[in-house]
Length: 553
Image: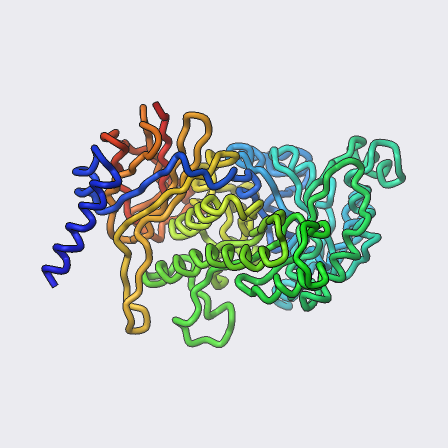
């Protein structure tokens, strides 16, 4: 055994000497190695990869984003000012709305015109509330429609984001979809709907480019099979007026790794033949949530999920594995797409992702699916964003689920209280990647290990990505090990560093989180990076997300 360890160590040292040149001695001393190949670009990181998701679910919209124009809470046109400010701080590029499952029960006409004339409707999520709660006339239960298309687009404009609208395929018609596009995009004064928009204060068109054709059409969006949905997609997208705006249609894709949906949809859409013409499909939506199932005995789906605050290292690592699975989901669907899309024109759109826990940590009863956000969620978000960066040639857009008071949220609110979560800190760090060129980056690090049902299991100690903008190199990485820091040598192949600095999101307690009562338990801190011959040295703290910003010589 000792001889085997010696030979393995010797081989690693020899490899380090070959790869890292002058830094070989330092590389051999480090327990982890990162090699950044600046001459091997992957593709441009679409800013829209850093998008967000908002749904009329619990308190995401009402109390989260929208507080009303008459509220004492600081607002702009009824939109929470503190939230707008933070959205601009992270350069939020895109926001998806109105769902989610809510989208396929939503009539967009209910949300336009004078607010006091808008109808109240039963919210899709009403049955998630108790009988006693349903006796209350809350906007989370009985949709007031105070927040509609104009409010959403205004929220995007004030945030600096592009709107991405999910259309209703389950319960409206293709003509209703056409009219929604007309309301948003027809030029000033040209149509009755353009005049209706002008009466709401927006004479100029919104020029909405991104349109989702349904949501989870295999489930709450209609229970279609892929062939049925392909027929609907053609009905909804054929001859939609564009008004000079290049519309980008996102088809409702599979649940996680169900490749049969991808193949069935495109087989029907293209009559079984590979093609250069993808019949109007710009993107294929993919959803992947991560949760811990199997450690509890409950048959109840929610109760069997893990707790947002009470978890042990095994729960942490199991969630790492489930989060990391989205990379294979992307690769598998990209392969399936390649069987039909000869030019790989269609991009994958991961417009719902993130950890999902059982109820019990929400700030108020109306915040259904609301949960507290810990350092664990920051790590899972970093893992996800790095995966999207590494696959920048395949992923055209993504949306973290959801923005506020829900799953994996960046913000928590209740009345006039407002707090950012550790997930916000991660988006703040990673914003530097937007529009950069993703670079091939190789990570080598000891695994974090644990016992899984009596069998040994492991997960990579370090994972990450790198991108280049001009002379600025951005490296982001996650150390998923809850106990061990990782001393790493970072080799720069094709350039030299003039200076470098690091920023860390983490805490000594893996359960640390920002609450409404304690809003600054988890902060971003700066850290020193050492310049070495051939590269850099940095020790990645246990259970942390790190950005290293390098000015190249």
